[in-house]
Length: 429
Ligand code: DOR
Image (cartoon, rainbow, N blue to C red; front, side):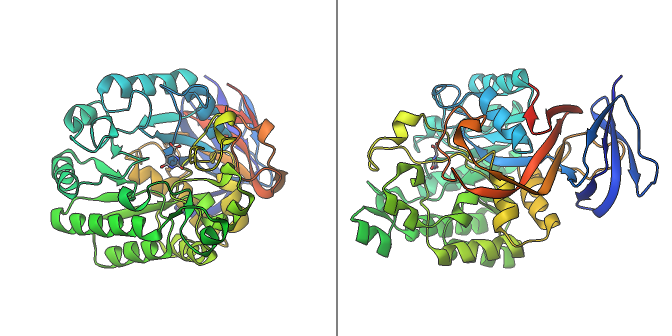
């Protein structure tokens, strides 16, 4: 049995911060040498000098495009991007073709993830059959197949009665429904945030209200049913406030924000470059300030990437025809470190143990670094600077809005199920 040791790093997890080496055998942490002068030894050493050693990250929101759009991403290329980003588990969104509304499709996604062996791929299930918003998906069967998070992401569930029923059916199963908040009648043809910038550019706008109205409705449905809900990619200041109030009232709601929504504004669209088209759209600097405040005070539970690869030719289309979405897995940590003025433990709560709990995998991801715990770990240098070069990304697509940007914070090693899957910033599988 190989003994892997991670030496010379600083451990940060939910228990706090300490200097320590970590030894891993057979998928588990077997020893943590805290503040010892003698380094732990093993058959294989991962150098963590100058690095933070933390639980691996969990992304609640990725589009892996398989089945259906393998020209943009496959489960293998997407999970390689995830591992390079420090993620040991990702929730695969269900807007595949066919959609993830049957046991056959979710099993296929899970198995492709196992075959790639780079991180745990957790298939989500649809809230409605085919994400069409008409009939509830078979939650019982999907839940029995291990699906925990259900969403029609890409679409919001428009029908309030259907959403109420979805929550009522979810209740006994203990599954979590995750809403993409968008009242579609308010966003038809929209390509960017509705505000002064879109008026100036003459482009059709996506009003903040389209998100806030559905969020408000669903918070009230949570109040009515008592069933927990998760809210995907919050983008507006008012959304943050609605979630803050709901939490203050004790309602069981959780929320995520994406790196692009807390780092980029609608003014990027002045370039008319579709790489900045995303749904919900980039908003204003006031919205960014509100998202950052929500990430700091616990209103927002998790950073999720909404990694949305698109084949290059599709993003070269005019703005109104190009698909929304941008890459996120390989830049998330660096954007959080560079752009959020937060203590590292809070950043790690947002990237690791909070989303692990929402995804229902807190038994194996986002665990404290202690003997006996599953070895899903990330080792990253919080001071390393690097420049985003699209051609160097592991994703099959190139649609990052950060090309040419120099960021701080780089993953050095990722350990998944006890094995190094990234070493020295290079994927081993
Ligand atoms: O920008 C987005 N892209 N938002 C979504 O909700 C869906 C996603 C995609 O699938 O490309």
